[in-house]
Image 1: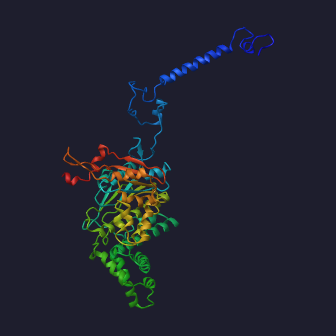
Image 2: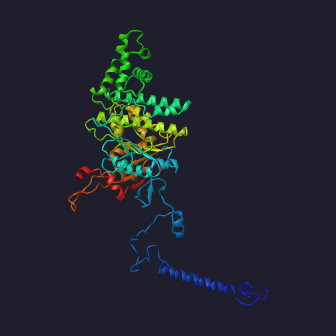
Image 3: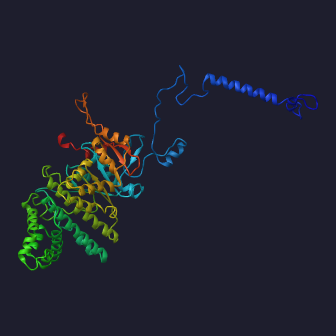
Length: 520
């Protein structure tokens, strides 16, 4: 097709009216040359090397690239390294317990800091599970040591091995020794509650007195449950309640178990009314005979000896770390161990209640505590009904400003209870915990554990691999350390778990040596 001048239409479009030079054909030639160059480059390969170098034979592609070195610093320090700084993938609020096994970043973890400062958990408590010898006490000791630096006093209510005595002594704390012929703990002793109540007025005073009274009933009922192997009846608990009130009216000082027994034998009118004897003293004697016989068993004639029938040998301090050392009780005396643990828990929580009541009234500074309940399974198996006693002692830790660590070996320890209702309540200890820390566990534990704590298949495999027994090291001629030593999975609700390896510093070695007697 031609235009009016007789020249092809394409030629007219290719001429610039201002210069008279061709333009469109030049651009076409350049595009064609660029396309040809691109085809040649694609045939030769990529123009830039990949992350591992040039691909192809003999071009030096790296098969392995080492991860760059990482350093941890504050925001003020790291800002000068922009853009090479990156946020940590693990929480950095709380006590440093070790390094993440996936990223190598430091993990800071403790129930008090994660509840109070980081707002990561809704309850300042943790439940620690793991096979013996893998470091359950070690990670709790690390948390207790770090929290002591933050001003939170560790309280160990019953150390059976002992695992925490050296730590508390290193912190200039108080170690209270209990055992046959070594120390006594009077469960009827209200501690400093009576003295503190005199400093309070109104509702605060009445609440503290009522709390101390309830703890004494709970402590006596727990000891009687262990002696019998079954819970006391409702009528017997009512008799104990009224008898303690009568005892407080009659006795000016601190009563002991023999004084409580004497009140029941004296048959005051208030106690007889609780038995419903209808004025028949013989009916009263029959109604309290079983209770009287059980109380006699706590006076030194029974299996528990006289450890709970004499005045308290050493009162507990509220302003220092405290450890109740019950390691002198032999492992064969499981009932005495369980009774000692329960008595220590009751006495210790009573002291915490006194401290918080005085702090609320502005008479003492506010103190926070990290309470450690080790070997939980020993108490739960000592008799039916003790799950309720433990539950009553531990349920109000958040309201009382107390962080709590409950330690046992496996979920089977909780599921081995004889009665279904006790098993469900014991499982509730794990469900209510703010965080669950799992060491090495056998694969048989996973079905029960995953009902309470959601875990992926990879997390379950990691935990079961940590339970592998140690191998024989021919180089040193003895067993190598267990593969799961110091390795734990920190779980909070349904969040992904954080695998961490606890590494002890040189300063901590002497308070974590549980084989010191073998060294000597």
